[in-house]
Length: 335
Image (tube, rainbow, N blue to C red; front, side, top):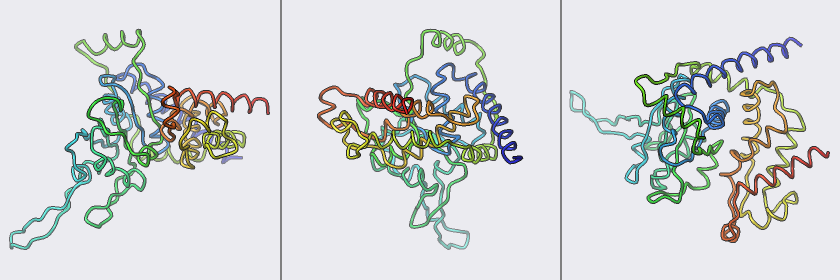
C-alpha cells in the first residue's frame, strides 16, 4: 500500500514540475499548447520528435527553448544538400606528436550531445539522413569500425519543411519510424499572433529558465514507465494499431482500399508511452481510452502510407485516422 502511495506522490510532484516547465516554455514560445505538449511528450517518453511546418512558425525557437528548460546540452545542425555523415557523427584525423609518431584521434561530431536539433532535416541527402538511424535507435554511432556511445539522455528534435517544397528529400520509412511522434506546427490563431507581435518586437523578450536537468529528466522517464495502464487502454491500443493494417481482419474496408502499409509494433509501443505522458501533462494519475484517441494522429500518421490510387482520389491519412478512431471509440463505448 505504501508503494502505491509513494508512486502517487512522485507522479503528483512530477505533474507540478511539468506545469512549471510549460510555463517557462510559453514565456518564449507563445501559444501552440498542443505543439508544446507533444514535444514534452517526446522527451518524457525518451523518444524523438519530428516537427513539420512552414518556415517562420517558431520550430527552431521551440527546440532552443526546450534545451534551456530541460537543462540539456544541445547542439544544432543545419541540414543542407552538401552536408556529409561525418559532419554529424565526427571523424578520425591523423595527428603527429612531438616525437613524430602518428596516430588517429577521433573528433566528435555535434551528435555527441543530449538534445540534437536537426534543422530542416529533409534538405539533406538520404545518405546524410541515414547517419541518424543508428543513433536514434541504439544511442550509439559506429565510426571507423568502433562503436561510440552517446550521452544520456539523448534526444533528436528534427524540423522539416513540407515535402512539396523545392530542394527537399522525403525521409525514408525506416527513419520516420524512429520518431516517436510527428508534430504538425500550424499557423497561430489571430490572438496568438497578436501576442507574439507584442512580445517579440519590443525591447524585452520573455526568458526561459531551467526546470529539469538530465538526472531529473531521466528519473521522470523512469517514473512514466511505472505508471499503471488499465486493460481497457491496452486493448484500445491493440485494436487501433491493428485496425490500420490492411491485411488484418480488424481493418475496415476503407483501410484495405486506401492503406499501402500500416504501423508496426513500434507504433503500439509509442502509444503505450505517449498516453501516459498525456495523462501526466493533464494532471491525471492514469491514462484513459480518450488519451489513445488523442495520440493516434501524432503517433500513427508517419508510420503508414496511402496507396497511389487513394492519393489520386484525394484521400488523406488525417481523415482516415480520424474516421477509424471515431469508429473504434464508438465500439469501446458500446462494449
